[in-house]
Image (cartoon, rainbow, N blue to C red):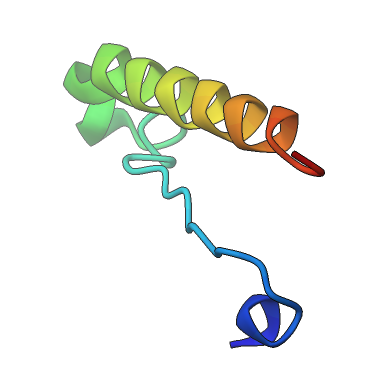
Length: 53
């Protein structure tokens, strides 16, 4: 709502499996967690680059 009141489009970038590197039972998901984090980071960079345009 805050972004909309300023005339901005708001997009939420989510990251899943953030505890996979800390919880031994999730060890099998670490590669997927890293890929998801990388994709989220790339999207955030892409969105940041579009600010002001």
